[in-house]
Length: 392
Image (tube, rainbow, N blue to C red; front, side):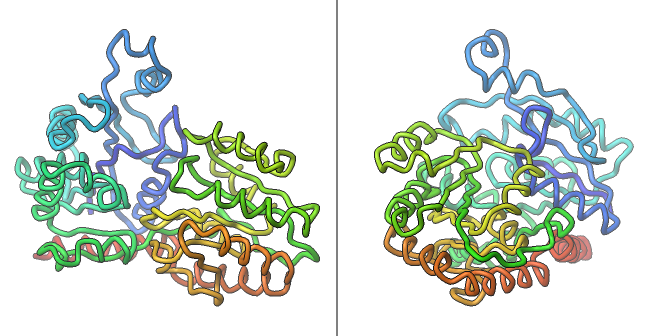
């Protein structure tokens, strides 16, 4: 089976972890026998934009094509406007930027199916290719379409729904996302396929420590991730646990605000900002941690949770988010209410004061992930969906 993947989220020379979850799925599909080529469109960065801002310099430096861990990836340029301006037309602009490349690739690689990741703009571009090549299109919604894009105006919402109505099948990475469009006609052709992890990327799991004192978060540093909630909880527990430390992997717009908050809470010496790390280095941090806590209230799924669980870390997440497909409260992890410092304090205190409980939850979480949430599981379900679509 020959698959064309379209995803602006994909690892590149500039950001080797961007869209790593799409790459992991592609690798797993290859292992299932699929032939895959990836098109990862990049915003066009003409001179003098690269002189003005690092983001545009990064875009300009990405090569037109590369082989990423054995996957053939192309990076065509397309016109993109800032601040979601004309977002309802962004997919057409993306299509114009990649159509010649697709025409060239299709001469030697006769695609059976197009799989786009996110509806706008990638799914829109795929929909236009569907018309040109008469190929089935599958669109995966990872979260941003339903948690952000859908709220950016009626025209954008209408375009988003039109794309999903035109897709042959829709994948949501969690039940939460599927529930958002439960009343739409295209809900009937929507299936939940959770993201996964590779067991070989994870260690043997926690073997149990006499004391649990190192809390870890891995995320982009933005408000919805709840990192400030963690810091307030750490400050309340500092006197009870003098050696309690909080490590944060990631970077983003809230970095300075979080550093300022740590100083205001008098826990500056307890919070370590590690910045953005590559995947192996992030896994190393997880292996060295005792508790994973990310009280994010806007998560389509959250692969980082199952990566932590696969390491055997007792994991704290938020109720009502995509990770509820995996975590059952007090059975294989802990769930807290959104925006609730009190709940996070209670959850952390439980794990810090009862290492046996922490170990039990960590081991149960690891078993849950290994039994049903690997990329192999994901690829098997995705391949089955491909076969269903192509058999019609």
